[in-house]
Amino acid sequence: MNFRAQIFASAIFLTTAATSMAGLIGSPVTLTTSQTGGTTITAGSSSTVGSGSEFSYCLGPNSNNCVSSGVTSGIDISDNVIDFFFTGGTFETDGSFTLVLSGFNVPITGVTASSTTVGFPFSLISFDSSSITFTGTPSAVAPTTPFNSSSVTLPNRPSGGSSYDAVGGSSASFAVTTDTAEAPEPASIALVGLGATLIGLVQYRRRARQ
Image 1 (spheres, helix red, strand yellow):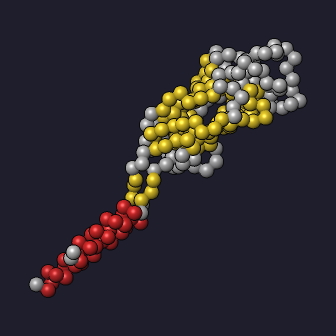
Image 2 (image 1 turned 90 degrees about the horizontal axis):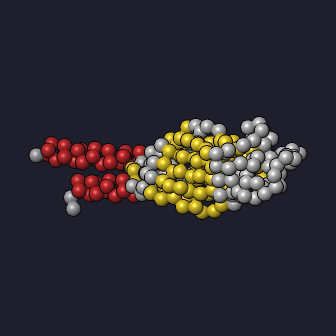
Image 3 (image 1 turned 180 degrees about the vertical axis):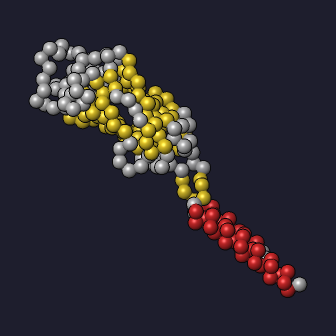
């Protein structure tokens, strides 16, 4: 193998070796919320996947937008996991709520539940390459205290009514797999450029000697 071929092969090897797997960190994401029946939920928003929680919202019905009643909720997205957090409880209600996470710029190939301690039905509905949909419904078992604050009571609440019960805190985690296509890192691109420069230099010197 001549010197030019060796340089070219080395550059290709280094480019292939120094690549990074695609994940959700750095991707834009939008939360869209909707509800049916007596369930209430605050509007979604847009964010970028990074450290810390990307979204927070209030699930009801409640008396004061999750200040002392309702279910305070949050979503924390990492490279390959989506975590949901819930705490508090709601008034008696029916219906359901839906959460749609969309706008991911990395193709999603799979979403599976990994753990859940949510006190009401909460589950994955569907996903495609750029969005994931979840839904929740009230539980038929009323919480002991239907508020974030244990000092607040609801005397006229019928026993056994349905509600969103997350008193004491609960959570759900979903593992996300993305397209395994790899993208070259900046250092790898620089190596290719260096290899090309060396090849050009070798060719120039050969021509100069002829």
